[in-house]
Length: 313
Ligand SMILES: Cc1cc2nc3c(=O)[nH]c(=O)nc-3n(C[C@H](O)[C@H](O)[C@H](O)COP(=O)(O)O)c2cc1C
Image (tube, rainbow, N blue to C red; front, top):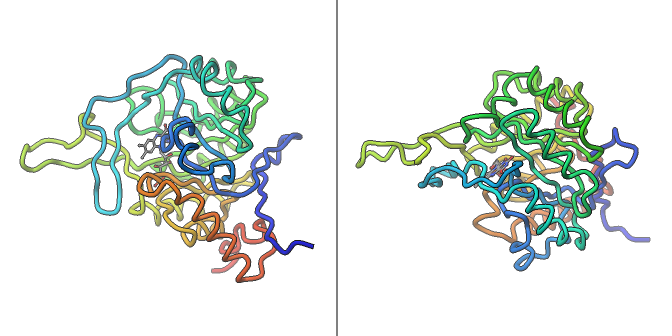
């Protein structure tokens, strides 16, 4: 009998088919494009899942340069929705994913509910696509994106519209730029979300004092990286207290200990974003670190760790 820990997690318990990952370590949207170049440098098949770059109905160029600024322990980005569009994704990327063992989840974005519906309908039945992550939390676009994620009614409307348009598992990605994360989490759960992921970036900015103007071409951007971890952890803890669907934790995770904090706060899985940009092998290191922790502590199933910190004041 093997004494290796069981790392399997279920991300869509509401669906008869479910969405089982072999482990809880996922790559966050926008970090590894469509995963194809990333697969050349890291054995991504060992990961729990990959989330691809935000995808819209038509291809988009994204925002004006400069789009990236480093901050203290963080990264400010205003990339926006630069992507190849859903048709090219289906024609060029999904056939590659169909040969992979690791599930790929498509992060989708739109300016209107109809656009979200159109993108998700096109993804229905496409081999290689294992689920949808509904991005209602991008702070870097003028229309759509975050505006759906800060209003519980709109968040619920877009969620139920997408659920009606697809049989794929639907993960709704929430924004931290809200007064009460619990309200939005409950609204999308009620509207049929299979899981929620949080957090997307925090709306923020930086100013170049020599030029006397904002550093980003877009003026504002979204903050990510280790600087946001305590905020993200708190929001995951709060959301996990009120919803029954799985919560996917994201925000500043840079080591296995960070990942374990999110899991103990109530996350069923975790996504690694910015920290993976400085060390592409980090996701696999984090997976190994989680396994080592479980072996050291004699924890047989990862699910036994989920939310343990919720019970302790
Ligand atoms: C350069 C960049 C691009 C991103 N693109 C997307 C995107 O297309 N869709 C999305 O939902 N989130 C996007 N994000 C947000 C990340 O997926 C993640 O939610 C956020 O960065 C917080 O996690 P981190 O601190 O580990 O990076 C992007 C983040 C960065 C840094």
